[in-house]
Length: 288
Image 1 (cartoon, rainbow, N blue to C red):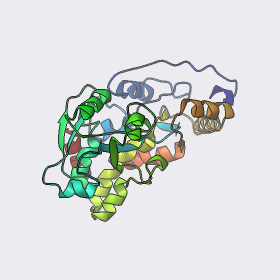
Image 2 (cartoon, helix red, strand yellow):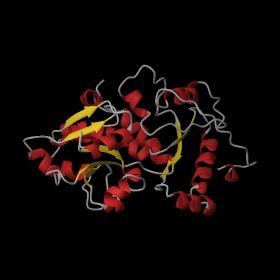
Image 3 (cartoon, rainbow, N blue to C red):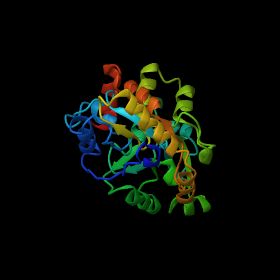
Image 4 (cartoon, helix red, strand yellow):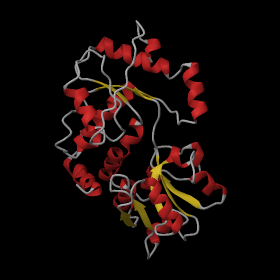
């Protein structure tokens, strides 16, 4: 990115772990000088802390300056193919709900959202130590389904092996449009249309799926001058078109679906300005 910033400044990476990016975002928001020389790259769900009123989220995502993101992180719900649940219709009609696994409510929010938005029932077993352990539990038959990032599901083991053996099928994806690698899997929005989810539910879905559109974003502090924000956004956009960068993306098999800073800025305003009933339902899904 420095290649496209006047003076070609050196970029120094400093990891700042803690609170699911809350520590880093708090720093960018309140400590970093508003000169555009300090940037942050929080996780895609950092906005959720503010939305649900987490006291550790000492920032306003609307006031941050969003620079851009290289991708959108769509979530997918997979299930073992040897179960009787061929589609979400089968889940909704089932007398015995499928048993899904996850590490916590955050990582399984899609599953809880499906219960709220379209009436699909699941038995959810939480407490697994990460996604890999949940996948092993699926292989052992302890649970039969889990939600995860679609890009990971189509690019890593054991999933590529699973697909070669028809071990699993895909019930729903969270994006607004079908992803090419899962073109036969309906989106949450298609299901909401089919089951006539009310407007409040659609607003809830907007907040829950926002993280997928944030992807892996870059942010700058509030009060950075508009001309410097434009400089950073332009440099970021040019970086995402750089031939060497694109070659590396292809070599590493990274997902690549860029989101502009302007789109992220609008999304940030949308997710935090929701009516109280939507926030209350969101807190229930997340266990707050």
